[in-house]
Amino acid sequence: MEVRQVSASNDPLDGLWLSWRDADFRSAREQEEDERRREAEEDERQREADSDEERAQARERRRKESKERGEENPEEEEEAKEEKEFRKNERVMRMLQQT
Image 1 (cartoon, rainbow, N blue to C red):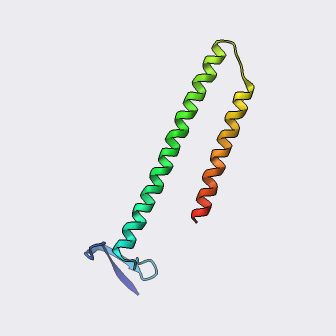
Image 2: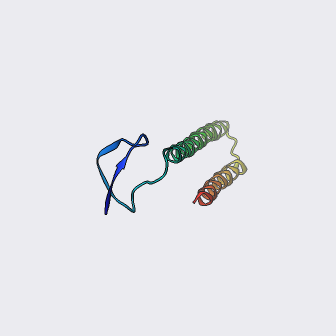
Image 3: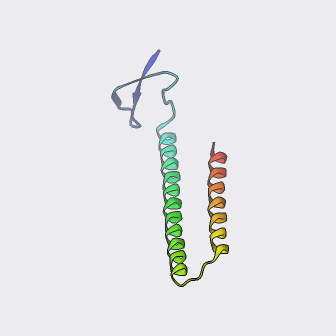
């Protein structure tokens, strides 16, 4: 059996016929809430990625500056690796909790 998918305002979406298993029978409000939640999650992931990139660039600048001055700090490099691994694990745990 096939059903015709409609928009949130109950207007038919031309050309979209779905198996009844794939049809979305949620209310318009539920669909909008889910869409807002997905957008918020995507925004949060983007902010985290931007923040990670900024931190990486700042860390790289500090590393280059200290190398130019002849100061090498292996502890700082190790801390950076640990921080990166921690943030990665934190994101994975959040994704697992959401599923």
